[in-house]
Image (cartoon, rainbow, N blue to C red; front, side):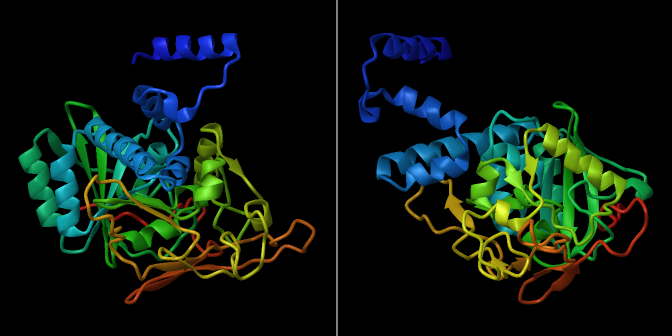
Length: 338
């Protein structure tokens, strides 16, 4: 059903002041509503029935396919390649997937584990249209990181898709691909997509377009401040204390508390498959990933400020998240481009 007809239908319902049962509406309207809502909301509604679960999966899969094609990537082959090499997509691409209509992502960040680059190169060659581009090493720092942090990132390569004039950033990690995600500067971009699963670490606040900065200092590098302002302009609000993001804040237990050890398998993380198959088992790529947020604020506004470094680790890797050392322009771990 065209959008104009949907609007006419809505106006007609208002004019007659007749309440219409949701399930009496046609499926085109259901699809339209799911198409404009947050995927966090869609996941919640999808849990109410098999019909709504199918609607969620249809919409999530449609968004994944559409956004992959925007960057010159064929959806099904890309999904199968990600499954093979244990890659994940993260950054603003995933945020645009979860919260539609707010902004257009500038590039796509694909995280691959060490040793998988050869397979990825061959895939891009077979796909066609991609050429590798090189950037000044002094400027190859991630827009999603803050401070001079030790991360599991070993190098980044940039591939331009000439037909669409878009850029694919391929980020190689020493540890599993998801470990780098939890060193991002803000909670609303701590999300990633595997070959079959959407992982959202802070679903409630992300759906509300709110979040915290993960940093142990208020003296953030200028480039980091610029990136945070970018997300504010995109409609996201930065809260200054964890209790503002948690409905009922309990130190050491609530999702946004810097004393809480979080995990991709905990009750606060949203994990939802989007492939319409009989197997609904989420593949998280690395279910051992855990983290703590860095913080320079007290959990409650009335308490004295406190500086706490963060932590990211898994079964074979661990790193402290801190911004208290580094250069004046540091925005994250240096991307080493070869």
